[in-house]
Image (cartoon, rainbow, N blue to C red):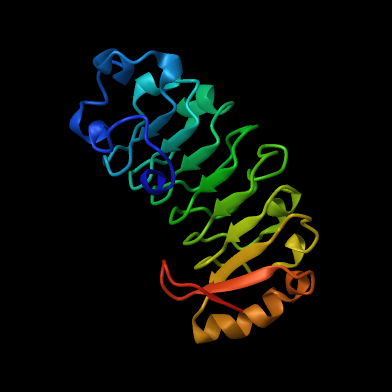
Amino acid sequence: NLQEQLPLDLPSNLSHSLNLLAKPLGERIGLPVDELHLFDLSRLKIDTLPRFLNVYTQLHFLNLSNNYLNDITALSPLFENLTLLDLGNNYLNQFNWGPFPQLVDLNLSYNFLGSVEGITGKNFPSLKSIDLSGNYFQDSTPLASVQTLVNLDLCQTSVTSLEPLGELPELHRVYLNATEHALEENRERTRAIFVRGVRIQFKSEPNELFAG
């Protein structure tokens, strides 16, 4: 959650107390466009991105989690400077946007992704952490090109093999399911990366971890 991880430029409830679909927020509070670096637009039940957002090209942190979004094309003017993007719990069934040259942390958990074809090193040259939990894709091969990847969450996905990730030079931690059935499957799934010393951690609940 952005509010827990990062210092806010704005009061935490400001985005919930204004009509964000009207004129730009900066005009409402007298803040210059280039001084606004974080937006928390989570839990607003929006299915379309506010049109004013593309004005804030200097944004570094953007939280759009827990909405009804299935398209982020309107965000393209912001791609260049974003370093953290939270799109968890939306309705995305693909992710073919980019590039995001400075993005370090991406949350796509609990969407409807049937593939991760757009999540490549070309589109994400700086990405270190990605949460893909709660999606439906099976093939992790595209992720193998994200050479900067350090942390990867694959809990509650349909990924059948982690072998494509075996050569990622920076990969340090992978999160997987902790159910008895999943643990049995993971013995084979994790073999390719476990021998490299990658730390495997299992989650049975969203916030529960234990090392494998």
